[in-house]
Length: 273
Figure 1 (cartoon, rainbow, N blue to C red):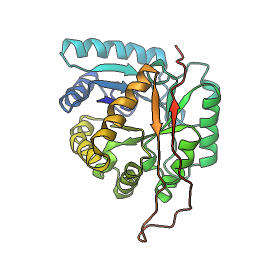
Figure 2: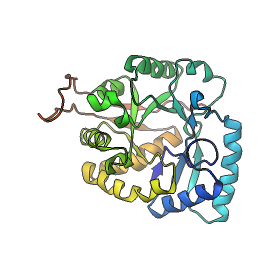
Figure 3: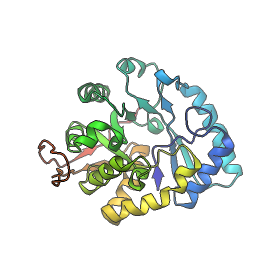
Figure 4: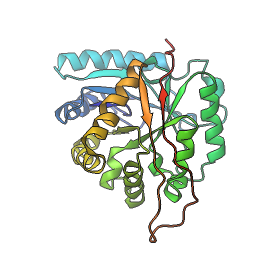
C-alpha cells in the first residue's frame, strides 16, 4: 500500500517532532503493510508552517538514510499539504511548496468551518489552469461536506480528486466525520484513502480503519484507492477512474439538494520536473 498523506517528516509542523518518532511511525506503517509513504508537511502561513522545500529535502535525505540503517522497508517521497489561502496561487511558481513526488498533483485542504466553496473551487480551477491536478484532503471533516456529501460530485466533475482519512472510519474525528466518510466510500466518491498520520498512534489505529474501508468498498476498490491510484500519482502516468454516485439521504439525515450522476475517467497530466 501507498500512503499519500502523512505528517511523518520530523520537526516541520504539528506532526512528528523528532527523527526517532518518524522512524517509529514508519516501523508501524511497515508492519501493517505500507511500502510507500509520501511526506506531506503542512504549508500554512497563518500558523507559520512554512518550511521551504529546500529544508524539507534535507530532512527527507536524513530520514531516508535512517530508514535504510534501521532496515525499514518503506520508500519515502516528498510533497506538501497546502492550506488554501487566497494569495497562495502567486506562491506556486515561486517554489514555496511542492507537488506529490514532483508530479503534477497538489494535495489541498481548507478550513473545516465557514469555508467558501466557491473560493475553494476557484483556487483549484486556477491550479488546474496552470497544468496541475488537484486532490482535496479529508473533505469528510469539512462542515459543507458533512451537510451535503453530494457537493463532492461537483468537485469531481470539475476535475478534483478526493482523499479521505482512513481514521475517520474509526470515529477518530467524531461521529459526523465517520458517517460522512462512510457515505463517501459507499457512493464511490473517494479516489484515495490515506492516514494523515501525525503520531505513532495514528498508524496503530490504521489497521482497523483499513479493515473497515475494505468491508465497505470490497477488495478490488480497496486496492484501487490504496495502491493503484497512489501509484499513478507517484509515477505521474495513468488513468484515475472517477465514477461517483449521488447520495440519496435517509429520513434521519438533513435534506440534501439533488446533484446529477457523473461517471468518467481522467488521465493524469504531464509531469513537472
